[in-house]
Length: 256
Image 1 (cartoon, rainbow, N blue to C red):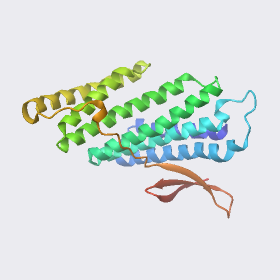
Image 2: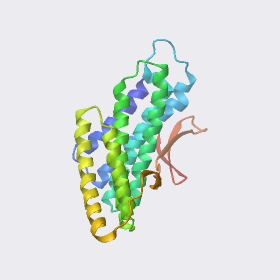
Image 3: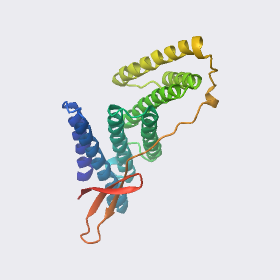
Image 4: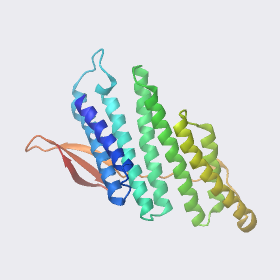
């Protein structure tokens, strides 16, 4: 339970770094780094600590490997979101930004599937956790569609870009967040997508005359999960080390 709270405190600290006004490149790096550490704590709980325990009657969800796995995935998604913000500030291509946001979606889909399977076995897990992860996933899906459409337009495929934006707005109408705070965020994003769509449709109508493909003919999303966490034990001292796997190269980031 102590380690679970430690992971939660690290995640909260990462958001404090951003909310305190440290939106500089270094501040976002610090936030991303702290979130990766939090993911490593939850990964350690799942892979090393809780896997040795048998859930007893009356224990809390925080003492189950499944919840630690979910929180590790959420923290990794948070960290990759910070990486996406940094990539945008650095002027990275829309193709990379789209892949980063779709990668975040993939992490959250994995967390959602795990949570839903866990909820079937236990009724003491708050439904607000699922609502939160679903809202995050939907938000990053919309951001993926935005950058994917911009990249397609830059590549001269404005018809496909229009199809992607129409699909995004259709999906947004189908999945509306429950909480009002999320709805306001979604409205800003969908309003932005609507403006871009109208601009592309107008340009296509008077300049390009490209056919807009149906949903089944749109390109499949491509994503990248850049942040993969694992714990490895040092046989010399018996301590566990947190590793970040990026592009198949392990870098020792944090020692416990």
